[in-house]
Length: 132
Image 1: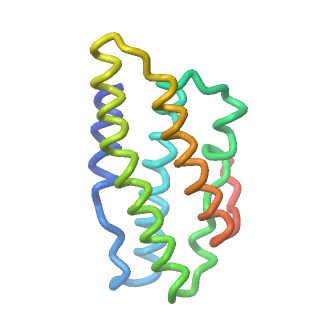
Image 2 (image 1 turned 180 degrees about the vertical axis):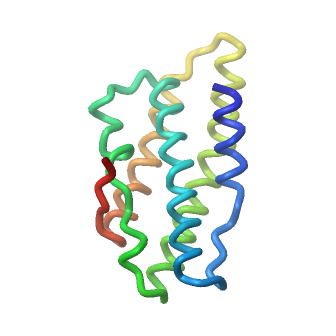
């Protein structure tokens, strides 16, 4: 799990660049969202969260291609950056707590709640592209 978490931290640390072409932005946002989905799996493990409770975050992908540039694209970029900014240190803290043999469920569920709210906001902003 540590290697997976390290890869996610690197992906989440990259700022989406809204100055590049639209396709590149969409690709970067999708990459960031993929890392956030990976974080959901880690949180599910730490929080003993049921598969049914994580299915929306894992199956529904914001439809970044629905943007034609402008404020919504920038807003989505900032939302994902903010989500990543909360997840990365939170996951590190959970790993440290678990390595000490302490309980992680309550904190992981709180962080998962934040992730779920971020997901729901992005879906409202972008619409849904269902992944298979």
